[in-house]
Amino acid sequence: MTQSPAPWWKAATGYQIYPRSFCDSNGDGIGDIPGIISKLDHLRDLGIGFIWLSPVYRSPMRDNGYDISDYYDIAHEFGTLDDFDRLVAEARARDIRIVMDLVINHCSSDHPWFKAACATTDCAEHDYFYWREAAPDGGPPDDQRSCFGGPAWVWVEDVGKYYFAMFGHQQPDLNWQNPALRREIYDMMNWWLDRGIGGFRMDVIELIGKDVDARHYYEGPDMHRYIQEMRQETFGSRDVLTVGESGAVTARNALEYSGRDRGELDMMHGFNHIHAAWDPDLGRFGPSRFDLVTHKRILADWQSALADDGWNSLFLSNHDLPRPVSYYGDEGRYRTRSAKMLAVAMYMMKGTPFLFQGEEIGMTNVVYERIDQFRDIETLGQYKDRSAAGVSDADFIAGANLHGRDNARTPMQWDATDAAGFSSGTPWIDVNPNYRDINVADDRQRPDGVFAFYRELIALRKTYATLRDGSFDLIEQDHPDVFAYVRALEGERLFVFANFSDEEVSIKTPAGLYAYAHTVLINTDTPVTVSDTITLAPYQAVVFGMD
Ligand code: TEU
Ligand code: CA
Image (cartoon, rainbow, N blue to C red; front, side, top):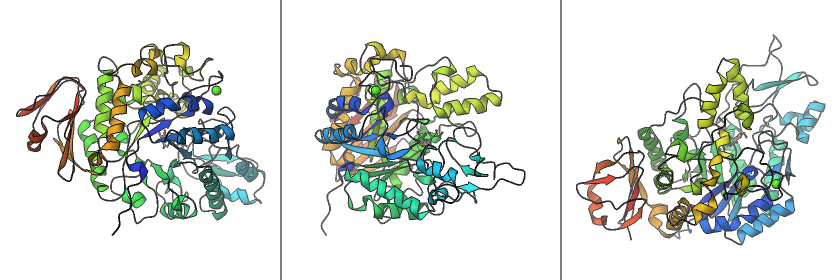
């Protein structure tokens, strides 16, 4: 039997760009595609293999591009199709592929489909959306709430019916049951694939194929059938990366999406490890319940579920999440060290890493003082709901500062000049005032900086087959502060230790480690002596094995 070579995305590291906040080339305060092109050398130096580009399509930007009004064009504030083609080519010249964000569960209410659907019930596009009669009392068909506040059903007077919108009211859900709608989407995907993109990240893919009448929204009855059909009609025959975002997928059913016989996707972005730290009632806006033992168990479950088939994605942050150093590490005294430790713990596992912009220099959460500093549609929608429920402004702002989506969306900190070198104008969202200390220019010139460390890690993932293909086993499962595991491939071993606490900790030395005691592959701090125990300094990470 001949073995096909491992796909390129198994050894590659991804880097997510949130275009609005990355780099502004023309001083209007909004990041853009020419800005991204001007920073490609930074990403080449880091060693990444692909960029996941958050949406750049034409959009009224109520949810910063996750509300598309024209799938065949670029948002005017981000540039033109020519700029986009130039980005693909310039990235390719640096061995970097562009993975597009595919937002197809919903579109913008400004999309011509929705306008046609509202103008007459007689057109093909009317059935591209979910329309339902009012309840007998005139109210919505049911009491489903939308993610961004308020009911999920929205009344349209001219139509005399409600439509369904799981996110913002101006993000109507698309009716995937309609074959013509599916055809429109597949044609659009092929149009982008033909432009030479490197794949798709699929926004809330678990929501396509829902049954709104049965209120079965997540992983609905037709979801897998539609993903399979999509693959056959679009990317099935192309060498691209596909990753589905799903708030619903678990280690138990992950193979249904990425198993080799399924004909679906390469990997998923699952959120079990993220959601475990969220309050069961208040969600992300409640207090964090991060617990390392739970975190390790969830990640280990995913590692073992996908040990021989399917594939993992590895991430701690994205444009919807707070900054990892602030959430899981220490944003003060141990910022640099905890940023490195988090990188080791997460990205030495088996799977494809996805860094989020700024993670490579250990950017932190921002502290806003007034509600008018927030820009995120979810934060502002929840603010309305929570204020109505009696939550004070101060309490709400404290929660939003810890967990809100704007933490990830403050401008990228390039240097210590005004507006962090992001823009020569006034940024669309306030910069984090700590940019004078934390920025790319400063961090990159430090041999012990976060950037230099990430560059090393990313290079290791390309060099060592054990990192790509090796098995994974937790050590010290129940230790509350240490994340430790072994990777193994054909007699080669790699021992990973990460201290998640601000205190020194000692653990018993695992038997197999002695043979590798003198081969230290990575160490973020002072040398670690291997005796009966090994002792780690606060937030220290160390990796033994190979040489
Ligand atoms: O997010 C999907 C999603 O369900 C959550 O992660 C979301 O952030 C929400 O805040 C739950 O609290 C995706 C995108 O990543 C997000 O930016 C979009 O706003 C959303 O879909 C709608 O397209
Ligand atoms: Ca701009």
